[in-house]
Every structure is written in structure tokens, then in C-alpha cells.
Length: 149
Image (cartoon, rainbow, N blue to C red; front, side):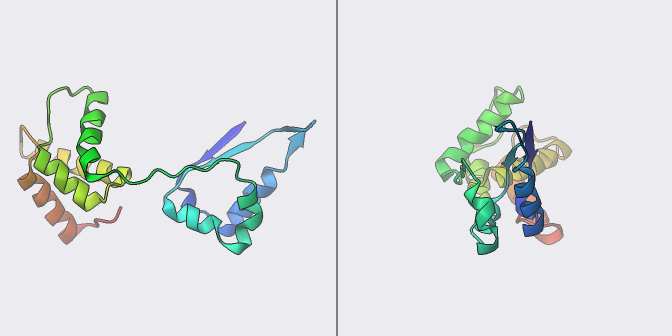
């Protein structure tokens, strides 16, 4: 059985210790439970704490997705749109560059910014998501929301 926990950086050390204890459950030398933790970079930092040393020793595989380079963000956006069924360009290169700058290349932030820009584009009946629209969205987020998703 596989247990996948998303946003694992939000777990307390006590909850992680409980997961470690669950991972001890075996049947005839077969491990009954595999645990996959998915989280933000804070998870990696948390697992380095001394009180979680026993938990960290049980980690067999770890993988960290590094932020995209600014030049890769546009390709990422184009790919996500193609997967959704959009073949024609929708975000201008300047809009992509601004999203790359603000998101610092973090895929989750890119997704949130693009989703919000798409809502703005829909609301204004824009044919393209351009720099002006992205800057308007960012300005509104700075005034009324949070940029650090």
C-alpha cells in the first residue's frame, strides 16, 4: 500500500514520528506501507532537524525539483497550455518573462500566477495574456492578496 501525503512541510514533528512508527508495520518481512511525502523546500529543511533524525534515516529516495531558469518558464507555460488543449500562443514572451521573474521559477508559483492571469484575461476578453495584463494582476495581488504562494 502506498500513502501519499501532499504539503508534507505542514506536518508537525510529532506527526512525522507517527508516520515513522506506521512504517514499522511488516508482514513476513514485506513492508506493508510505503510512504511518499511531497512538499515545499521547507520539508527538506524540517527533515534535517535532529529530532527527526530517525525519520530521515528511513528516507530511501529523495528528489528536489529546482526552480526553472527564466528561459525555461515560457516553455513550461506553453507545455501546460498544450496539455490543456491550447495550441496557439496565449502568453506573450514579455508576460512569460515577468511571470518567471515574480515566481522565481517555482512551478507552483508559475501555475498560480498563470491561472490568475487567465482569469484576468477572461474577464477583460483579452485575446492574449500580455505584460500589461500580468502587471495589472500583480498589482492587484500586491494590494489585495499575497504574492508568496
